[in-house]
Length: 632
Ligand code: GLA
Image (cartoon, rainbow, N blue to C red; front, side, top):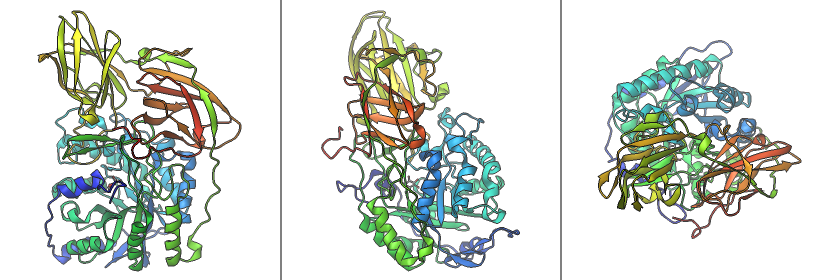
């Protein structure tokens, strides 16, 4: 899939570069037996989902699955129905839905299925709106989601191997899937729910080829109570590595791939079996410091038309991307250049609906194609649009020091990772007191992911992992205090670094090749801003919180214009909107209507850098840097 600058998106080129092609020959019986069998006996008031040759069947009738991918935590709950209904407006009949393990189990054994994480309510709403569901339980998801949805705490012990038969990994995965089963397994279609089929793992063929592992995940999903149809998804060129042929197997591809070629490869793997493009990428995601992705519609329409002509099932990835609020964005790691590439908080994806859920020209183009294939009654009217609010520029007049939010200090001879200290996101302050005077280069094994370095409270410089920065010149006296404030970004969600991206200072710190021993750690997870003491006035050159208010007379959504700010996080009425960073390309943070209220609204911005103009405005649409404006 070409990026605007003509280069293939890294995610894709990594994927294809990694896997040598090999031909897979399988006995036809092995391929079709599982797929053809009815999955469970239907009960009264329920439906039976089966397959026959190339087709899916619902109660014996051919079913072409036409799905759109939406991610419930990336859409404010109050907007769930609006976005689901918009799938119906496109003529779609199915929701494709990942489940995000680390969102639900933020700490070991403590589960959250409330509010925006009320998964069963999300699926019930889809059903209410007349949609079937493809349920992608993973537990690995990818999705440009922090760690691919694998909790960071799973890897507090760095020897635990992600997506493998590692006993700790499998035990935690099994425990989670069991809990998930209690929540949603009753929503399978043969039990009266909307779920047609449940996905095992995700694009495993791009990562490994341990069939026993895939079978073990399948068994965990089965024993968690998912009795119905199961499926896998993979890139067609690596399908033989990841797919379990006895299940239904989907293929994913983008708009530079030709659907015809992809299904040819699929046919070489599985001559018979229902065909489904489980992710048709009509857009792409963005890394900080790169130009915003924009994908033209025509290639998408070509692939779509080719598939619709053949009654092949398809899922649009993403129908609507939404926002990776808070700490939810993931990251890539480019193997060739050894470069860390954190994802921005907008998951706009240049999708059919934009970040605010508004139909784009691509939506209209797809709708036109769909209308040629489906009867008029398949298209629900578009819901009434919400109002986009412009908020006149206002100043954040109060500031608060960071200090009260730091956690209890933990001492250790060498710097420890956040995960080993029980923290999965946010910041960590590392401190060291010099025993003697020294001058030279301070070297850090690795900074994950961005550090502000100070001596005796005076800023010496910053280190950015994207740029592989690990060194800084220093001149200190005995008794001086070194402070390294580390900000983290997403855990790598794709490729071999999954589960190997513990945050903080990695591999020790030296000054003129002398190892610095004796460190204090203070965590700043930013989950609770309750302890902050704001006062009117501007502060320091240090990291600080800034607070201001604005008044609204009516309901609507807006985008906060963050131009002029450095690097940090912003909250509106307590909702963490995500990360802002002057390297671009994202200049605005989306604020859904339900985060706002009529009357006085509060904004808090945390910034690592001095900010000259602490003002903000609300604008009605996104602002992206243009090529040349993005700071590498
Ligand atoms: C793959 C993954 C998705 C997502 C896309 C790229 O297809 O399965 O989760 O990461 O790539 O957006």
